Image (cartoon, helix red, strand yellow):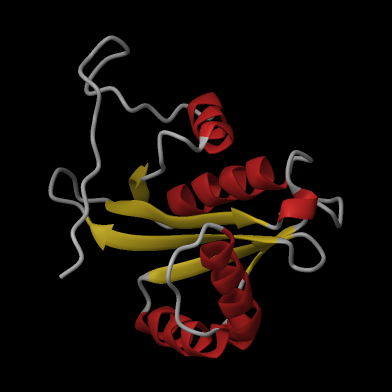
Amino acid sequence: MSMSSELAIRRASEADAAMIGRLLYDFNTEYDEPAPEAGQIAERVRELMAGGDTEVLLGGAGPDGLAVLRFRSSIWSQALECYLAELYVVPARRGRGLGRALMNAAIAFARENGADYMDLGTAETDVAARRLYESLGFSNREGKPDGPINFYYELDL
């Protein structure tokens, strides 16, 4: 999808599950979030990808980053919705355009695969990610630029 090997983006296959598992494990441990071992994550990624509603884009030669996309039927249109479940770039590659390349590819991939809406969640403290998302047109305002702020809630069950 992109020409430079540092910014090259490709669609992952189930054969990439071990690399995806490692990247997702590194992501969670970097931010002190609990995570199963990389091998367990890899197996779950294989299952999700085989189920047809999960796609992963890999970026960089390492690969050095990923975007995990989850597709679901929309209530509001006949199209799909796409949830950006994870976006991660290894620390050494941040600030060099890989996150933006992954996001641009994710948006294009979602559109090409029938989605007319994309959503994501991020922390207030993740200023760099928020800046990236907002520069691409994402908003945390409901309906219009001066609308009420949207909130994302979660609950472990």
